[in-house]
Image 1: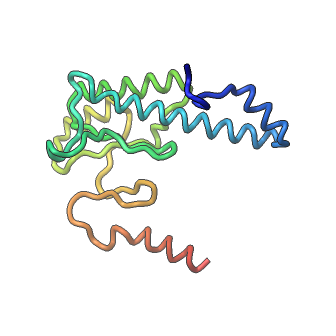
Image 2: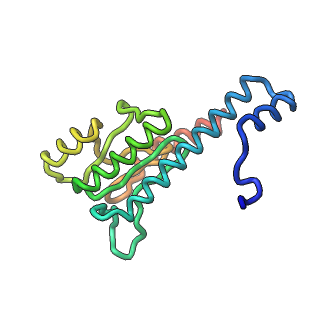
Amino acid sequence: MAKAYDRISWTFLIAVMRKFGFSENWIDMIRGLLQDICGVEALSRSLNSLNDFIGFTPFSMDLRDPMINHLAYANDIVIFYDGNNMTLKLIKKAIDMYEKASGQKVNNDKSFFITAPHTYAARINRIRNATCYMDKTFPFSYLGCPIYFGRKTSNLFDGMVSKVIKKLNG
């Protein structure tokens, strides 16, 4: 038996929203939002399941650290991996399956990868060819926060500070 309220019919939900007087634009917006949330959750779970595959090597700084292969918020996602070919193929397969199932596509123009400093050009080119993404270097911004490698310096946070000051000044 299913748990109470663990699923709901779209037809029922739309009928209830119409009965409550929601406009069609509002209903479409809510439906799109729920589909995006469900889609990102499906991709997130698919990426998490990669840790169970033989040949997948998760990104880890230390053996005692948790195995993290991605961070996701809304429709933004950062994927971490160790750089080996099998892991890259498994990640690409998970993304391809998600795209086929959801109808959504990764925006290659906004997607990029970052490698550790002093990574060989051949490895960077291999990743670039396999993903169709361009490479960037640290620091970069994720959800408005600087992601950096090495020692933090105050200039990394200049963008955040100026945004806060701008908001405070109206």
